[in-house]
Length: 388
Image (cartoon, rainbow, N blue to C red; front, side, top):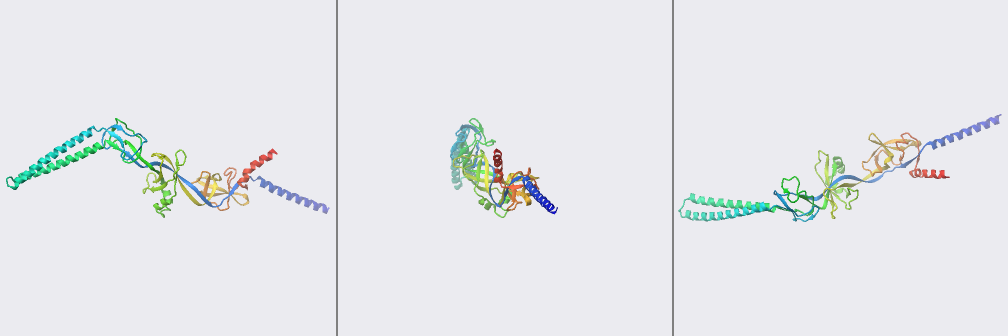
């Protein structure tokens, strides 16, 4: 009897041991295979994007100095002009008549002055011989002074008339390209008109204007620890993305930042200078300024490895016994569209879940962590097994 009892006990223990191993293996097999990555601090090279409005280095509105009808438009829209080139000719008839009238007035005043000089000279001789009184002599001197003043006034009117006549020929103040021409021959041009005759844009170089908010300015100057001029000088060359998504071949340099912050927008205007040798960029164009940003000591994780709850972002880290624990993290506002760059909440060596976050993987879930490459190969291996 005793040998039989001992054999039964040994058999029962063996069965129990086998059952425990099978349950453990089944428990491991029931945990899903989830891809994880091991994170380590590194660097990130990003780009901050700012919408920009492009303007010529010099945009000059051409406005008439006198009121007259346009008789000739000498240029066309988009034409390149040189400094001093004639753009418009206004009706000159009334201004030529004013010049002729002023010239006649000068001639009359000059003759009157000559007569007053002769009279004053004769009166002075007679006074010196005590033939006439001092009063009569003084009247002659006064008439001479009045004649001189009238001549000076007539000459000033002539200068003004000639100047107004010259204003009827509207010339380019600088080299550049002609903008739109809203008014043509026969239209009335006036200094009080709402729109200019045209605009001359010097686009050999162009300015791209972007806006920095107050927070960005403080970050750039380390909250005032660095001077604004030094911070601007330290900025790297920037790129310009055109409205069609293509990149402008030349890089630009941040030139200035306005000293005042607009109270309505809470931002300051930043001016970026770009060369424009081929005239590709025009005033009024739009684009996006891309400013390089280099960040140190950040963790790079895929965006789908995080979840956001009430503006708080979480990542899932594999802990002891392959149990998933959610961790609150902070990420940079800038990203590359695929990854987030974590500044706090993670540590070197953390295993971060990168799939099924918030769906098949939740806080407290138990998983079987695998490398992303193994997870990608699993469907291929399963298909091959089915074919067998």
